Image (cartoon, rainbow, N blue to C red):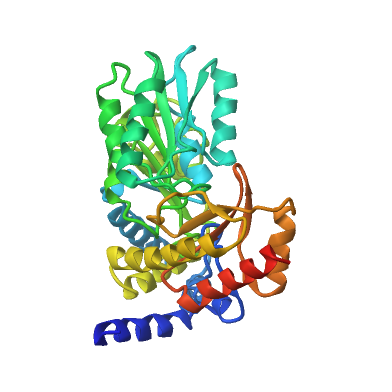
Length: 405
């Protein structure tokens, strides 16, 4: 190991100690929820304390609140490669995707093209929208694309060509598929949609990409790019964002409406035909938990200390590759991807008929935490920047033992 590698490992080891949840377990559920570092928790409580010192509803408080909002919006917008006026603060991925989705201009008989790997939260919203508005739903098959990234990218565009209809008005995709771990070429999809006569909107679920893989190109290309801070960014639950295109800001109407949606937050003018903000704030609603913003910014700063986005992804893929390769030695196990993962998600099928939930519980009783998925029926383990080779090997040893038990 070189001197630089040793220094980097020492830095990661030092940073890892700031995540209490990693001290007493072997944790592979970053795709479900990342552990909150102690400095972020302190930032949250410190912000609460400052709000109480200023008074929870005083004229002294509003500049402080405004600074928290603006700082968070600017930091998230920069990571998404968009101007701050295109970044709305939300509570989670679902609200980030669904609030602008329901405001898009649809006509009876329009088509929604939805991939077969979308999360139930976004999928259910699309199904209900289609029922209410008289829309048709088509399926974009991507679940079985599990090979070489270049070949997969080409296959995604080919599947898109085959699935688009003359009246397709919206395409729904995830940047990083939460079940198989395949990365989708969002910018290329956006380019193709530009040439469609109906110019479909592109909605992207970024739950698994934000904080893990580079997002700026995809976020800037999508019309709706919804993400959360509580997974790979290791921030607090209850805070995320959505990057919106200029077209969405111009054409979509607000849906769930509150005082933060309005240009004049203090007075409702019944004669005003469009009282809403002209920017992304038209999709923000009302009172949010401001201290969470301090916590998320702190978590993002800590990730930056662990290396650049590219350096962190390199570390993540080195570890996920080690796990993917080691699964070949576990009897009856088949990784979903046929090539080493390009992210930290490693999903694999288990050979026996044992309920996967029972296997997760068994591993948990040994202090090793992964999760099971229902579609496809598989297990998923996630490696992050702070995962160690020893933890990967411990998971592999436990799987080998359970496979032969």
